[in-house]
Amino acid sequence: MSEPAAMLDCNGRPLDLGRPLVMGILNVTPDSFSDGGQFFCLDKALAHARQMVADGADIIDIGGESTRPGAPAITVEEELSRVVPVIEVLANSISLPISIDTMKSAVMRAAWQHGAGLINDVSALQADPQALATVADLGAPVCLTHMKGTPRTMQENPEYEDVCAEVFAFLRQRAEICIEAGIPRDRIVLDPGIGFGKRVVHNLALLKHLPELIRSAYPVLIGVSRKSFIGKVLDLPVEERLEGGLALAVIAAWQGARIIRTHDVAATARALRMTSALLNVN
Image 1 (cartoon, helix red, strand yellow):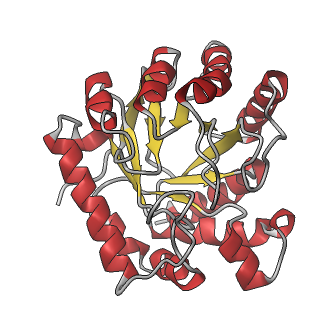
Image 2 (image 1 turned 120 degrees about the vertical axis):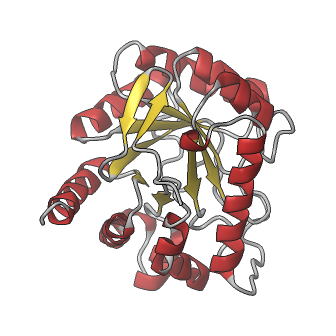
């Protein structure tokens, strides 16, 4: 089994995967589950992105369409109008790689042309028939996420016989399909999709058995920040889930996850620096 990529070339901006990295979430949406509407206008979005850079983010992930459970779909034109102005300004004002969180091939292409360097698709390049060919044509690195159903339906009644076996097999299969389509192996990142069509027990099982996915030799991204299963375990509202998310982020990084996607950049960056310090002790 080959080693996972040590470096991602994100449209000319390197992303060093030699330590656990922080992906800061920038939702330019009116309806995301945790911060919907907070950064919907351009000035607030840019200010928040720059604050995340100052707080220790390694990559900024920009999304223009909410993927919370039950979220409505939006048009390509609406999504482009939300994300392209932000990407365009940030690409000319920060040195970090920028990720685009989208399922639409037209948004992927436009985002890449304006300076984004990673495609983050919660449908694993399945929602848009042109997405696979688009990513291959761009030469972009891509994060493939497992999601059962769609954002509109994923939490209605998710069932699995063996959640880890099914999710990990799906991701390996999608990775192989990407490779066959011309996307190099060293440009593929996998995400088990915590909270995307999973019950509490499913999310916990996936995190506990994460090393099984990491042994697939692809970099693994984990996103648990403020998610509802943390609230259910701790009986806490969304604004009080920081400690639960940090605990899971550290556990995931300890097991070998390379990218932690979070709303809470400063706290997560500090927690991961301590994790890295311990991992690097002989």
